[in-house]
Length: 54
Image (tube, rainbow, N blue to C red; front, side, top):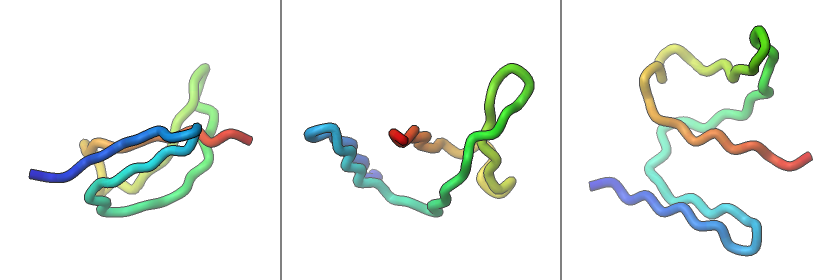
């Protein structure tokens, strides 16, 4: 069983999980919406998408 803990304390996010890969991307325009490009090798995997404050 994998351990996953997600906590929000004083507007700070604390995540404990088994992480395979970490990368930072910029959201780009896609038609009338937006998208985030990711490596094809992670197709079908579950992800966390966090939107940082500016």
